[in-house]
Length: 168
Image (cartoon, rainbow, N blue to C red; front, side, top):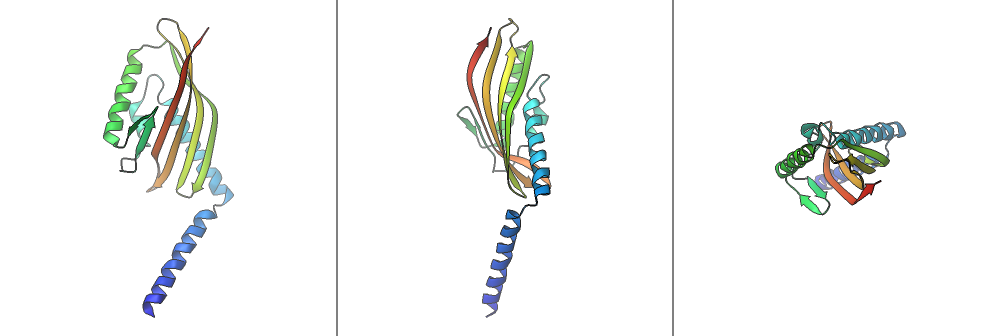
C-alpha cells in the first residue's frame, strides 16, 4: 500500500511538473524569447572585427551535451570547439578584411519550456577583402538553448553557409 502511494505521489508530481512546463505564461514566454534572441545576436556579432573569442564561446555548454555542426564538420567536445573558434577567428583576423559584418535577415525563436528554446537566424556574411573584392554569403545558424543554474547555455549549434557571391 505504501509503495502504491509513493508511486502515485511521484507520478502526480511528475505530471504536475510537466503540466507547469506546458503552461508558460505569455509574459514569461516573451522574456525568454527576448533573452534568447539577444543572446543569439550577440553571439553572431562577436564574430566580427575585432573578433571576441571569449564572448562568442561564453554561452556554450562545457558539458557532454555540446554538439556543434559547422557546414558538415561536427564537434562534441568543448575544448576542441574552443580550439576551432580561436583558430578560425585568427584566420579571419589575418585576412585583414576592409569590411566584415553579419546582417541578420530573419530570426525565429521557439520557447519550448521554462528551461529550453531554439533560435534560428538567417543572416548574410558581408565582407570586402584587402583586394577590394566584395562578397556575400547567406547563412543559417540554429542554436538550442538550455537553462542551467540560472544561465542559458547553447547545447546544440548548427551553422550552414551558402555559396560565396561576388558583389559587383
